[in-house]
Length: 232
Image (cartoon, rainbow, N blue to C red; front, side, top):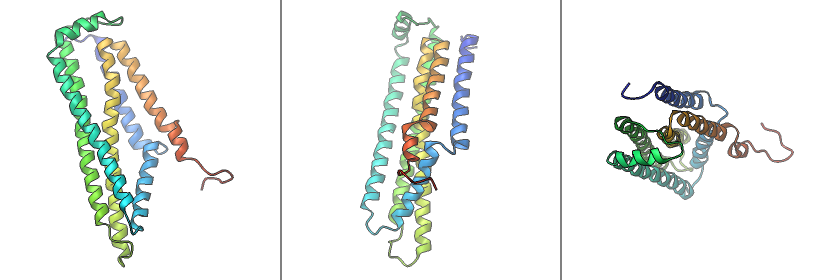
């Protein structure tokens, strides 16, 4: 199909399946993962913010999150431009790939489709980062709209702070999806060296991401308890 061998198609199906399974495993069943634990702290942050009279620190943190998201959105555009450049240098790329130790000769049309696939991954990442940046803007507005700590309407203060927390969680979710696309793009590069390398790199990337969620020092830090105390 389109010049791809059966093993190429099998490798692509493995890649797409791994991405899909990981996505649903983390977002639907990852209760003990770092992402879900940090979402709880985001909500706690906004609860604490609502009780502070001075919120300069909260605004600075939100600005930092926005700047980080903007950086990745810009990087996505650079990657899209690089992919577009590769489409105009197929002949040179074919020669370079064939000279590599694991290089596999492929028809021009196949290489073009592979590059288009990589371009689509970075395009997806850009949309996720751009939307995440917008959501962080919304969260910043909600933060600013949260009534003062001395405001007598405690219910409205809690409501607006909760909305700000949920907006921040949504922004982080889309940022994570964009970052996940970057990681899987690294695995996708293995396809240019052959389908077996493609599958091996896909498995390796998924394993690394899984470990960061469920068996990393970051997760240990989130579960740390002072000596002599037991978790509540």
